[in-house]
Length: 248
Image 1 (cartoon, helix red, strand yellow):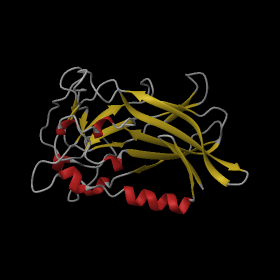
Image 2 (cartoon, one colour):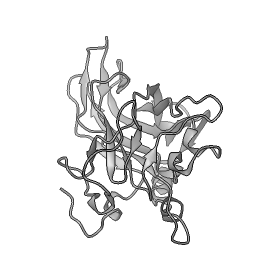
Image 3 (cartoon, helix red, strand yellow):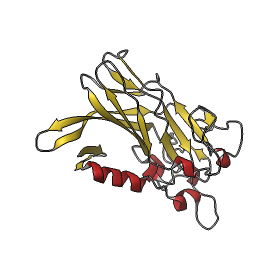
């Protein structure tokens, strides 16, 4: 069973059903992301990375700290939108991070129990690097439209096609609290938790064309002293973006 909490909804899912759901949402909607009738598609932001992890006590107790990449695999560059009414930038909180611990619960057996939930405030959205230029990344070079960054903090914020923004370990909010819990853990990262990029009153360049791939998960173990290997599961097929190029 899996104890899933998201946007006010809490349900219990058998592990088999969870894997089926993950397989379904892992198929990205190419019609939505790439556009119809040959026209320009919408941006498609996806979380990936979730690496360079460590457990530290620098914040007063055991915390799991990590990197998060936000890549654009869609049909056009993403320009961070503004609220038409106030002029303020939208996507004020870019991620929600939820940490689950595998526990035995009477009446449910072994269950994923939520132990921490917090939001990551958006610093800015930028072209940090082209996906595939860092070790271990898939190669998205076939959709890259320029070699140099065009989106910067405080100036034309956004993410170009085939590029990623990098919220690295050590930044404020790039962590979840483990506390005294040990055993198996699952961290879920949810992009655009308030659904700002699904609004109908913003330009297409500020929309996220496929919200079904807005999450990623990392599974790991922690015994109180040693962090085990991490397994990252994405909600899109990274290998399908540029299938004729090899991963680095």
